[in-house]
Image (cartoon, rainbow, N blue to C red; front, side, top):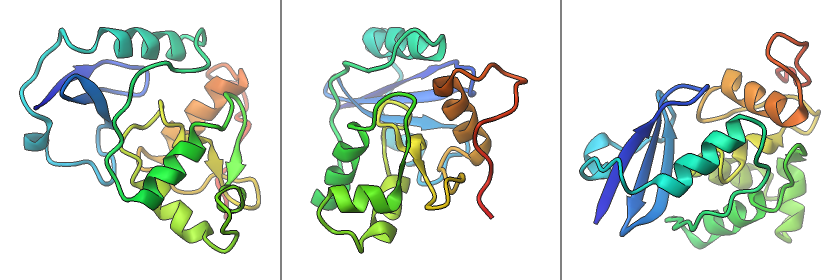
Length: 169
């Protein structure tokens, strides 16, 4: 049975979804590939305490690694990409090509990008840490502005400072 809550964040409202009590979704407003709201189940604001606490600590710059149980629904290839995303350390980035190589298929960077874009648990499964081959920002389901802000948060750049990452041409 699915249930959800909505959490305020510095990046706008986040919808957290659980499947039998295990986090299976974290969606931003206006996110690409966001499932329809009717798929989230009834609202339950009591179920997500650990996830809310860890997200608040992350946004405050106090948490660098999440320890929340996750249930990732996707194809075997998507789940392998998402597992690889979770290996990218806080404050670091990887290119789509580097992820493809880590998966043993160096020609699969486009497929990696597609799987990355379908990540159902943004922020916690850090798809925002994937950048273009030239080091610039490329697509992000939550929007490039949010991606830049998340990377700046992890890079220690305060709001208003020069951003570390630029859009890739």
